[in-house]
Length: 447
Image (cartoon, rainbow, N blue to C red):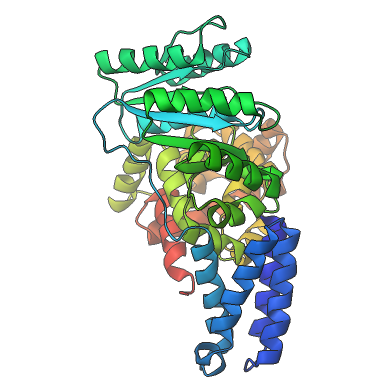
């Protein structure tokens, strides 16, 4: 995510850090590079202009020029202004109303709107502990009605039945009445999308809006469209009055223009971002965390949240209790940690949220292929060998290598990794990946 922008701005940071003191001249050079990086990321020109002006106003003042550590002061200003640009804080969904809370979903066709309805329903059910009803008012695409029905079944929430013959406004009114009579907490309404913004589309969704009076009207935008997504969000806001934005496909967005422009152009907050195709792949949008990632400092807090949401909590507690009682972390435990990485979407997704310096070093010693190989090696061991790795001598290693399609050298590499991981588990009290990540967070430099 944001690879190109992050790399460009990280290079600017390195250049600045090489100066013993900062002057107006070398600050100007750094700002020029930041400007180019933002324009290449497809950030709106007006947004880039305002951002550079704000950074420059503070940077050429005493805060930087007179600072004992001017390079850090400059980076801190860029960091703070990036946070401000994206909204400053996580703007949560407004659920404070008499049930059912109605949330209207709008957007163009192909942005991932129906899938996002399913992800948001999953989040409301499993994290917010709400009773959720979903309904499709997209009568122009029978496949959309069926898609939402299947999604609802997979996450075990109720889907209000509709047909292509129904009228969108009537669908919304009937679904709202049904949700009220059955004591649902939240009603999510999926609406029709088009390839472009057109008058008929706006009239239809405006009619739905006026008849059901939703508490939240969320615009779903494809982040990979960059500035085009921002312009579309602006058009919807002017016609409808949206309360927030959900950016989809952020995991495939190497530029980041939409995330950096939408708040300033529309005045509306980004509430969630789509980070994977899984039903749990919808995350709250935190401007401070994303700003840290753009500057190459990673996003350990979001990674910890993800670990907590993905891991088997009972399994994690059992491991912690085991280590705290003085029992040894074994190869079976190590295998479960590897499988946990896979459940979170793979190693690359985790490294994407680590600070650049740590991610680069980690990528040099471990990769997705190695993790799958290590799981195969452990699967080739007997239960005794997994629980007592000390008995793994030459003959056993040869048998394990043969059974897993690997070499004795690879078995030895796994055992070396195991010893290192075992030491880390002792250090962090057996808390597993989440606790180790918290340890990493405390080692990171403060802004």
